[in-house]
Amino acid sequence: MRLIVQNDKNQNRIRRPVLARGAAALICAALLAGCAGPHVTRPAPGQGGPAHTLSPQARQAAEHARLVAAARRWGLDEVPLTPPPPPVKKPHITARAGFEVDHQEDWELPPVFTTIPTRQKIVFLTIDDGSEKDPDFLRMMRELKIPYTAFLSNYLVEDDYGYFRRMQSYGHTLNNHTLHHPYLPGLSYEEQRDEICGMQDIMQRQFGKRPTVFRPPYGDYNQDTLRAAKACGIRYAPIWNEEVFVDHWEYREDDQKMRRGDIVLTHFRGRSDWNGTMVDDMRRFLNKVTREGYAVARLEDYL
Image: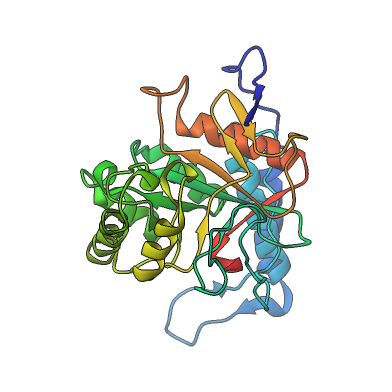
């Protein structure tokens, strides 16, 4: 049973602390540092004015100043933490205990899991369906350099594939969430396969790639679901351990806490469904995970 934690009394109030204090000074210092000493690059005769190369320290300072300014612009309490580099050796992913189906291992069916095994204090952001297509959300996540994985259902994205192509061009992965978002265990094997493989065809045609990652709608599945998914080229079937909304979080675990490697779910939703926008939703998510010392990592780097 999901447990719900309600939002603060005034969910629409945005705290905007002075995050960018000294940002301009950092940028200036970075530029000055990059233009001094051995890092000055002089052009060949007749090729114009001087060209300058920033030192690694100066580039780092400038990027930090940029992130400070972006965090302030989007109303965050502080700059999101930077995730560690992807692991050289990927973790071994298995089905979560109690989430297996018959013949899970001997038929090598895609595992259903809610958490990635890792010692790093990271979580993974996943966003489902594709109903809301908010350009501010794309700008926010790009400016803050927050990775996420989208699970798309065709009936919700077919009116604007271009929005998700733009998302993909920013480095985010697009994955399979079926054609019509049905309750899969209520369908036959053939019907489930049509839903999953049909979306694979759409993904190939519209985005140039057949995903190997699939999320069953509502997190519901049976053995036929995983058999069909495997037949369609799917290797992993992650669901989630927490779900974030504009005004509350829901937890799978009884202690209502995030864990290292947890997969977090939210949806492409806006004011027509929620009391807020996707930017509001992401502000809530980022403030909480940063406050608790977590960075947001890219799911596919661990699969």
